[in-house]
Amino acid sequence: MKLRISFPFFLSSLSLLLNGCMVGPDYERPQANVPKGWVSSPASPTQSLDSLQWWRTFQDPELIQLIQTAVTANQDIQVAIQQIEQYRLRLGLSENAFLPSLGATASGLKTKLSKGAPTTTATNIKLSDFKAGLNVAYEIDFWGGLRRGKEQALAQLTGKEAAHRTVLITVVSNVAKSYLTLLATSTKLRLTRQIAANTRRQSDLMEAQYRKGQVSLLDWERTRSHASAADKQVALLEQLYSQKTQALSLLLGGAPQQFYFSKDVQTLKRPALEGVLLPSALLRRRPDVLEAEQNLVAVNAEIGIQTASVLPSFNLTSFLGFQSPKLGSLVVPGTSTWQYGAVMTLPPFQGLSIFQAIEVSKAANKEGEHRYLKCVYTALHEVEDALTAYVKTGQQSEASQESSGALTSACALSEHRHQAGYIALSDLKTSEIQRDQAQMDAVDLHTQSLISAIDLYKTLGGGWEPPPSPSPSKPKLSNCPPDPKP
Image (cartoon, rainbow, N blue to C red; front, side, top):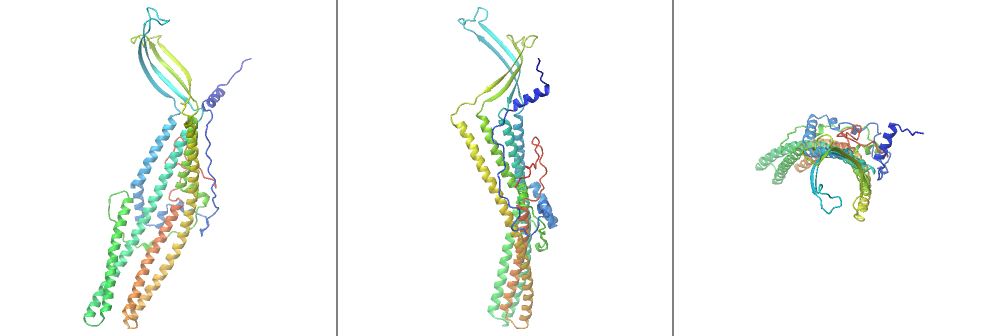
């Protein structure tokens, strides 16, 4: 009776033998206590704000141009891109470990044997041996150490891609906030210059009236004080505008430059809050959460790598070439030679240190789990804070606009009453100061309400939709893990 083995069965059996097992724990995502909804959300989750290129919702061409410049020229973004390229090459190195190694050898050896050797004769005291050929070696990944190495390299690459997205979102949000702050400073500077010009004219008028004996020295000095205070505020705002301009130019990745924006920040409308991601979906959107998880995947794979390093390794070796006692007749018919075999190598014994490396990896894995959970809960709290800030700054801005309008009307009435002689100049000045301060507060609170929208987009991980995950063999720039389970 003959036992016949099919060729496909032979290949599958050989594949199982070569692959062997894979030591080390398989990755499992730590379970986080993720709520079903947001405490502070005033809207139903019907539309994801972060699925938009949110900076376009402000409908400001200058802002869009600044962000486009920063994305292509910011130095932090370029550093993140180069880090991705480094880890992409590291992944290629880990994949190359699965391929056989091919080498070429050539040797010439001349040996003089002792006359007392048992095999020595008068004709073989001196021997020559010349050899040249190709050798091939292949490491059998019996314990899965190479596969764990590839798993680790892929996780590290994916983590760097997530870090790149974090840098992108941070830079874009910082550019937008810097731009809005510049617009607010420009608006306040324009208002302050108008106040300074008006108070300076009033001071000149009061001086002329004082010299004619029409007003008191006290009224003139108060007007002079208001004019000097306005001039000081103009100089302060000019300094602040210059500093914020340089901060923006640094974000754009270039040398110091000046920007001149004439737009009133109060003309920009804040995007409406139509819907927010569910907390469970946030874990897929936030790149810092994705990075923390991929770091955990990498340290988890390290346990398998360290475990495989203390176990025997198996290699297949072969040689094909020529061998001859004379160099001149090395490559002639009849001098070919070949050799093949298997080698098992035990790791060098270093006491308990080889096992302590495994324990270190396990401890690092536990640390990574806690870091991941901290990142998840931090993200959830940041969104809650951003939602609250979005709602409350909007309410404050509306109340401030109403207060500014009321004080502007009250100041106009005070001026008429002063001209009619019903109130003193000091009362009019008090009304003007209250009006001016209310206008400044309205600008600040409106800017804060706009920035709160940017912070909300940022905490939601918004700006870019992550594309589907590519195959592990050819990871792309925006490789992301599958959707996490709450």
